[in-house]
Amino acid sequence: MGILKNRRVLAWAFYDWANSAFATTVLAGFFPVFFKQYWGAELAATESTFWLGAASSFAALVVALSAPALGAIADAGGRRKSFLASFATFGVLSTAAMFWVAQGAWEVAALLYVLGTIGFAGGNVFYDAMLLDVAEPSEYDRVSTVGYSFGYLGGGLLFAGQVLVTQKPEWFGLTSAAEGVRWAFLTCAAWWAIFALPLFKWVSEASQSDTVPLVSAAREGFRELVSTFREIRALKPVLYFLLAYWLYIDGVHTVIKMAVDYGLALGFPSSSLILALLITQFVGFPAALAYGPLANRFGTKNMIMVAIAVYIGVSVLGTQLTTVTHFYLMAGVIGLAQGGVQALSRAYFGRFVPAGKGAQFYGFFNMLGKFASVLGPLLVGWVTLVSGNQRFGILSISILLLAGLLLLARVPEPAAGTQT
Image (cartoon, rainbow, N blue to C red; front, side, top):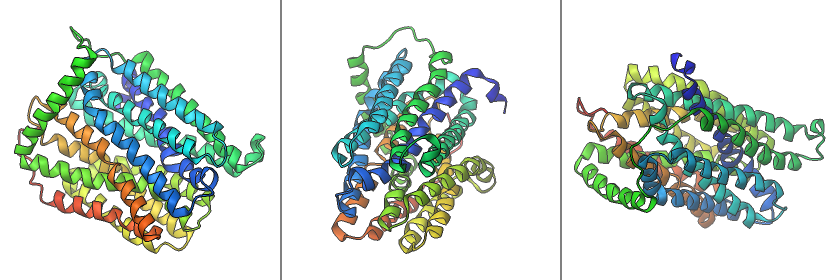
C-alpha cells in the first residue's frame, strides 16, 4: 500500500499497535481471568461478574461524559499530542501498577482497571482526532484501516508472547503462571509506552493561528454538542443510524469484554480461554481487511447487518456451550465479524454527513461510541446476579444486538451528495 511509505501514517498507526496491547492483555485477556481467580477468588462467580461489569461500565461512562470537552480541546488545536501523551501515561502507569496488586485485593485491581480504561479510551479521543493531521480526506478510510490492522497484529503478537510465558513460566525463570500474568501487565505497559514514541516524534499537528483557552474550549464543546444534537434530531436517517449503532456496538463491546469471564464461569481452563482470544485476534486481522471488498459488492449496510446477525448467533448459541472446542469455534466466528462491523459502521456514517460538517458530526459519532460499553456490561452483570445464571447474562446481550439490527434495517440509504 502506498500510504505505508508515509512515515507519519506509519507513526500514527503504530500508536494503535501500541495501545491495542491494553485491549488484548487487560480488557479481553488476562485481567478478567486474574480478577476472578486471583484477586477476587473469595467472591462468588456471579458477584465477580457483577463487579467486573460495573467497573467496565463506570469507566466507559466517565469517558463518554467527558468526550465533548475532550473533543473540543482537541479541535482547538495545538494540544492533541500533549493530551494524548497525558492520557497514555495515565493508562500506562495504571496498567503497570497491576503488577504489584496483592492476591485478594480485588477492590484495588478494579480501581486500576477503571483508571487504565480511562487512560486508554480517553487517549483515543485525541488519537482519533490526529487522523486529520496525517491523511487527506480521500485517504481517511484507508489510513484508518491501517490503524485497525496494526492494532490487531501488534496486540496479537504481544499477547501470544505473554501466553507462552504463562504456559511455560519455568522457561523464563518464573515460578508460576500467576507470576507470568503479573509480568504480562508490566510488559503490556512497556509495549504501550515504547511503540507510542514514533507518533510523538514524527507526527506534527496541523498549525492553527490561535489556541482557545481550555475552559472556553470545553464550554464551546458542550454548546456545539447541543447544536449538533438538534440538527441530527431533524435528520431522521442519521438519528436512526446513531441509535442503531449505539445499541449494536454496545453489544459488540460487551461480548469482547465479558467473553473470558463467561468461559471461566462455565469451568473452562483459563489457558484454553486465552488461546481462544488469540484465535479471535488473528482471525480478525485478515477478516477486517476482507470486509472492504465485500461491502463494495454486497453493500455496506448489508454487511454490517450480516456482522450483527453473527453476533446475535454467538450470544444465543453461546448459552449452549459445553466444551472448550465450542468456545474455540465461537472465538473464530467472533473474529470474522469483529473488525468488519466497527470499520464499516464508521464508513457508512460518513455517507450521511452534510458537506463541510465532518468534524462536527463525527465528534458526536465518537462520543456516542464512548457511551457504547456502559449499558452492556452492566446488563450482563445485573442479569447474572439476579438470575444466578451466567448463561442468562450472556443471552441478555442479544437484546441490544437485535434492537440495533431492527433499527438499522429501517435506516434509508443516504442521499447522494451528503458525503464529506
